[in-house]
Length: 229
Image (cartoon, rainbow, N blue to C red; front, side, top):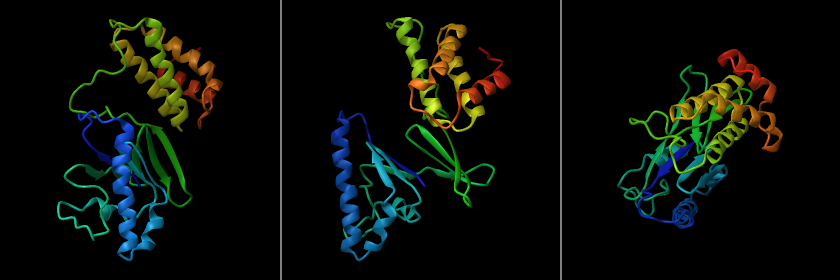
């Protein structure tokens, strides 16, 4: 369902230059399919898209063979996209722990197929910093060169993203509690952080509507974390 590609950001290339560079390989990959008599495979990439150095492929049953190619790539071999010596590409779709679906993360969203039969799925906010072998600095510290008001805007942005991406109220509530816990650990008062969360929820209509009602999120916050208006 989804694959990710990585390249070094340390070379100081602008995102637009990176897009142009990677598009060259993506374009030639499609042309190789045509030139080698595999034009029938091109429609499989209809739902394949990229954003800077991330590649997403939805319902693409053949892309796995494109990811397994190593250093022995030949110019007339249709089954590869990017140069192996420059770009690491790996599949990051996995079978859900409960065994009933597949899970894939792309950019800031995690998508879980809950029922292949009826096409149902759930979404959640994906944090790439989770699961790292070290503890990254998240958001901003209280003792920084930013005002408290500016710092609190981080919470507003995070809550808006949760409203947009999360499809389960319990997940949204836990994510909100996680934001407050992180900001508290960074030196901010938990009560002030929750006040920003509540204000953002009250003004949820100002942001792009998501899949959950604010009422459902507030109920989950009260049940799971004892947070009420």
